[in-house]
Length: 273
Image 1 (cartoon, rainbow, N blue to C red):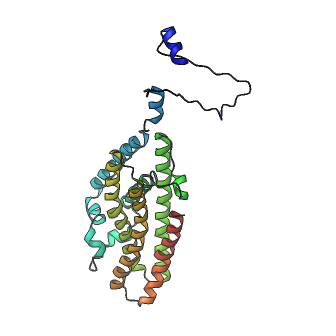
Image 2 (image 1 turned 180 degrees about the horizontal axis):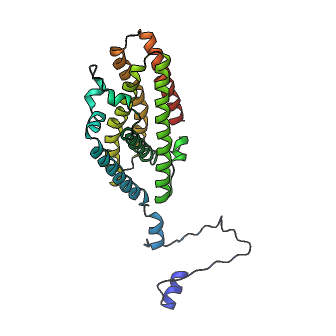
Image 3 (image 1 turned 45 degrees about the vertical axis):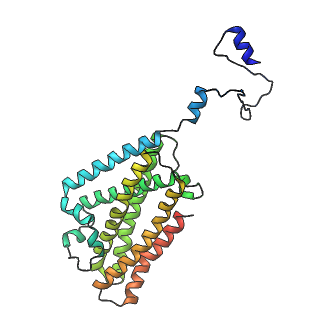
């Protein structure tokens, strides 16, 4: 009995060694069996929740806040346009040539980067506590603070590339369908919707994760919300462009299929695979 040995030797700590020839370290299991519950520092260390992800959430939130303040200082009017909820549904939105024709100027590109960082951050927060049944969950799996930062930046670059592919797709389809005047309005409102919807969701998730929120069903609902937002956007942009387009409903629907419906179907398939 180890307990009697400890009393006989008047020791509070004992080192117990087990030796067996040909022992397998990979399959070896050790257990401490006692009649009384013992508070073990080693056990507490194993059971202690890892805090690296909360540290990452705080650091990433500070980075996003700094970028947002920088953009506000550079062009406050553009920030107001991007975060205007009423203009998403407005059918009388004025044509701002500087806004729609300079879709790739430096300030807009900074906003695209900000949008990509937000979307990537949102996916990492959601997939962190979602059941591991999705392929993307494995790609966004992190095990430390450094890997969290690297994964966030790499996924943000991927999303930024998708944004630029979206620009090429919309302008190419608009030129093909003879509706080039709608391309800038279309893409700008798409980025506007992403920022208005996902920026508040990220703020909510940040506080939720920092306060040790890890309800699986809640995160799963936020994952499903992405699909509903994307399909809802299709209806919004169709109605918005329908009021401004001089072409038939079938002509406009074909344009929406090429620029929104087919890409959304592909994205949803990849996201929920």
